[in-house]
Image (cartoon, rainbow, N blue to C red; front, side):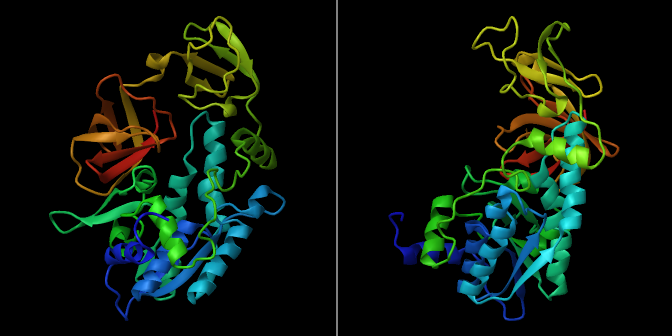
Length: 380
C-alpha cells in the first residue's frame, strides 16, 4: 500500500469522476483484469448506475488462454465475479465473428504480407468502440467506460480531446487514435489520471476479488507469445501457403544466413536474426526489408532501417490538423518531430533528424503535446 491512506486514495480517485446522474446509465467494459474492475468499482462507489459487459472474442479452449488472458474464458468468469461483488447487472457479449474478421484475420494477413500488425489498435477501432458501444446503447446506456490509461480533457473550444495518461509507463493513448471522433463525448476513462500503483491500492480498498491478479503481457489470442507459430497454424487452417524458407542478405545482396519463413520477421527487428556471417558480436543489424514472395529478408545498420518519410492510409483525425507535430510509431516508441501533410485521402509524414524505424502495417500516431490529434496506418 502506498503512503497515503486507503480513504485518501479513494477520495482522490473519486474526485476526478463526473458527478452521477440518476437518469444516466454507464456500461463498463469488463475484461476480467484489475484495471477495468477498478474503473467499475470507482463508478459504483461514486453513485453511478453501472452495467458490466464482457466481450467473448475467441474460442480459447485447449490453449493456455483458457487459464487467463484478456477476454478468455477465465477472464469472463473473473469479470462475472467482479460484477457480483459490485452488485451490478452483467452481460457477456459474443463478438467473436467481428473480432476474428477485424483483428485475427488482419493479424495473419499482415504478417503474411511482410508487414507488422497492431491487433490492439484494430480491436479498439473495430470492436470495443463500435459494436460494443452499440450494445451499450441497446441497454439504454449513455456512456461506455473502460480501464484504458488515457485522459479525455476539454480544449479551449470546449471540445473533448484524447490525451496521454498521467502515468507515462501505462499510457495507452497510442492504441486509441482510431476510435471514432464522435465517441469522445460518450466514453469515459476513469483511470486516466491514476498510476498503476494507485489503481492496485484502489482495487484493494474497494475489496475487488481480482485486486491482486497479475497483468497479461501477451496478445490475447496468442497466449504463448509465439506469433510465427500462430500465423503458421492460422494460415494452414485457411488453406493459405506459408512463406518459404529464404535468405537473409545485406544491402548489396550478399547472403548472411538463412531463415524459416518471412512471417517470422518485422521491419526494425534486431533480435532473433541468428548468427549472421561476417557480422561480429555487438554489431547490431536490423531488418530493413521483407519480400514474402521471394523469401528474402534484408538487414542493415540502424541508419539503413530508419526512414525520413512514410505514407499513411486509413487516417483518423481526433483534433486540429496542425502541420508540425510529434509522431509516434510504436507503443513504446519515442515521439519524433515531424511534418504531417494531407494529400487527398493519404498523409505524408516527414521526420526530422535521422528519421524513424517505421514498419508497414504499424500505426503512426500524431501528438500535439499530450493530445492525440490523429493517426494512420503506415503503407509505405
